[in-house]
Length: 167
Image (tube, rainbow, N blue to C red):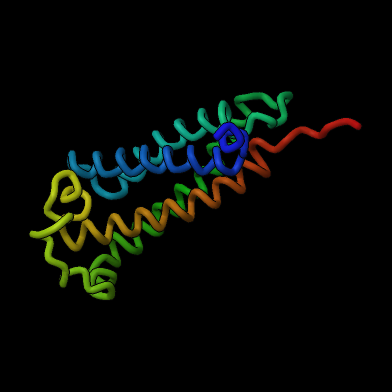
């Protein structure tokens, strides 16, 4: 178990999952209180970026270049995360807002019985209780997998890259 918490990729995945959960909870909470998809994405991204920077800086990339200013790291981190944010907005618009009917039809989501099983159980019904919600939830998960991969590469090789060691 100790070895797991010393492995950078394992730690990134653990905190990446935690960041994803924070993102999803904030996004769907914002939707439930009346925000549209774009507003919910924007607020969830801001909260997730702050959470991710702190956890990456403190727990994951502990061997990063210590001479680098934390504000420079934060600025680079935010710029890197903005690429994921733009990807999130683009896919959300194409697959949830503009293309929802296409994907609901393609995946036959109206054929599911949303009155039975997990679809009707609280709190799941708030996330997957209709064809539209299942489509939104599916694309949210797809987006998060893409963003986690992109963010790891940006964090590892740009933001928190290791300083050069002198030999």
